[in-house]
Structure formats: structure tokens, C-alpha cells
Length: 274
Image (cartoon, rainbow, N blue to C red; front, side, top):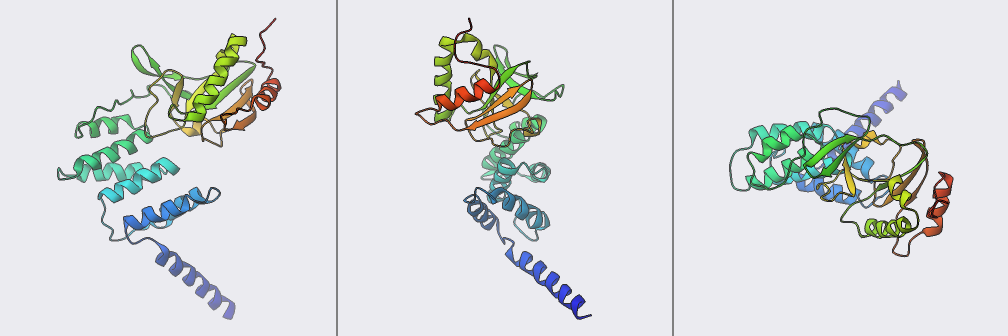
């Protein structure tokens, strides 16, 4: 009997501690979020946990404010929690034209694009003064989908690994280290033009879409389950579509010897073919 009472007290204490630790305002949520991000190991897990245990069960907070939408956008960007898009759509339907509403529409548009909900994005754009382009809807879902820039604008295509060795680079046009690795590859292309055809550049899901033709936006991270690091640049080496190894980062001094070793593992070389 005493053990049962003690167990009940422990559960009650744990529940109370969780309840009292939940933020009481959206500025508090954002402050916690910034604190969690300082921990590279458990930070994202803590954000997700607080979102599920506190935000989804919140009471009497001032929903629909700019800070609320700022928090939702940050959670969407960092975790991809599916409940965010439902809340964003509800806020959109209840949002009235008022001072500051354009800023709210901007954050809602960010959320819609992060979740690749382009119909929702277009509905927001009808209410919001912006020149941001909305990609086309994905009409056919391939196992892996890439958004490519063509002469006729954006187009979704399916990606399939070719036979043999292939490299996937997670990069970003705003990343100086991605540019440094690309410059290195351009040198490699001068010695082995075929190497350029063995490299596919993809961008992590971000608040902006790629504007050039080198790096392609993805549709969902779930389509790339073997990619566990989306920091730029991250270099993944495949053989017959199977991940063999990876490299993280590319300093200005480069990692040429390490890169060549990874190339060798998948049957590729920087040297011209004889």
C-alpha cells in the first residue's frame, strides 16, 4: 500500500513539475527554444518534447499573435512537426486585416512553403503583398523528388541513383563552404569531366528556395532517410544507390586526400580516364 502511495506521489510530482515548467507566453517559448539550440546533442529533442507536452496542450495563451507565428515557424523549420501546419491553417482562417497582418501572412507563407503545401501558400499569397514565387504542385510523387530550375521555370522531377558510384552533396547557395567545395570540384572537372555527372547537389528544406541551376531543393527529408546530417556542405558517397560513406564540412583549405579516399571506395577518381 505504501509503495502504491509513493508511486502516486511521484507521478503527481512529475506531472506538476512538467506543468509548471511549461512556458506561460510565446516569448517564453521562443526563449526556451533559443536555449535548447545551444545543445547540439539533445536540443532538437527538447524542442519537440516541449512542443508536444506543452504547446499542444496549452491553455489561455494569446494565439494568433506575431510571436505565436514566429514560434510556429521556428518549430516547423527545426523539427517539421506536422501539427504546425494545421495550426497555421486555422490561424489563417481567423486572421483579419489589421495592423501587422502582412507580417503574419509572411510567417504563414514561410510555414506553408516549409511543408511544401503550395495550395495553402497560394491562398496566403492572395492576401499578402509579396513577389515570392510559389513552386508548382507535385503532380506525381516519386520515391525521391527534386525541384529543378529550367528555362520554363521550376519543375519537379524524380531522382534515381545511377549504377556505380555517385555523390550527393547537401549544399546551399548562401554557404561559403559549399562554394569552396564547388570550386574544388570544378578543378576536378578539368581533369575528369565525367566526375561532374556523378554529383547531385541538394538543398536542405529552408525558408528560401535555390535560385540557380546547380543545387536542387528536395520535397521531403523523409525521402532521404540515409542522410542524417543536413548541415552544409555534407558529402555522401553511394555505390549502386547504397550509402557507403560520408564527409562533413569543407574548410577553405579543403580535404582533398580524404575526398580521394572516399571516391576510391565507390570506384571513382579525379584522374582522367585512359
